[in-house]
View 1 (cartoon, rainbow, N blue to C red):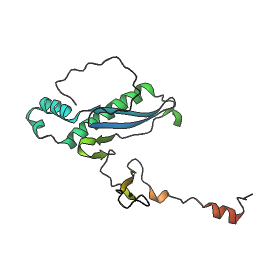
View 2: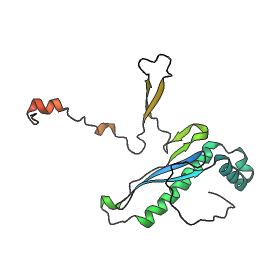
View 3: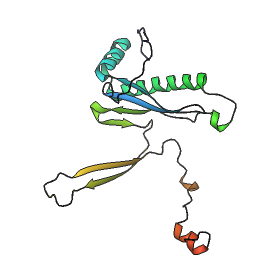
View 4: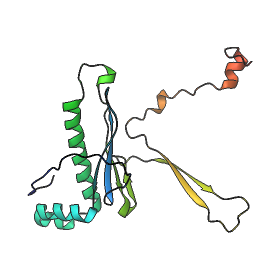
Amino acid sequence: LFPNCGIDVETPYIVKDRIIYGEVFTLIAIDSNWCRGYMMLQAAEDEVMGLIRRGAGSDGATMTFRELNNVLGEATNMVWGSFKNRYVGHDGSRNELMQTQVPIIINHHRDYISFGSEDPQLCLKYTLREHGRPDAVPVSVFQRFVFNLNWSPEDFKENPSVESFVNSGELEMF
């Protein structure tokens, strides 16, 4: 993915801050019997894009930020796959097998996010307005539902309401 590059690795260390390095990062879930969490790759967009352009020769001269995101997504998949193969057990039980994941790519510089596919996302916009403050600026909150890993609407069964349990006698309120 990064032609003509040598890679030096520093000694691992612990950080307690929540500061993001660079403008673009990928995020992928890690879930096994001994750990759950996320792995990230973080970079400065211009620096990594320049490195890839120089390694690709003339073909990289027209590289776009979306192509850079694809490269970083592929690098994330490769690291995640190596982690899975080396550190996650394979005895067949659900708790031992890491589920399939795809990297989430966030590029703050470009106001861009990808959940690993071009599938549409259900989005709801909420506008919050402060009562009693007509001069207050409304605040927008966006909620997204991303079903790119599994989408089987035919399997949906609505959960019964509490009222239906009370009416049927399955639930008694004291």
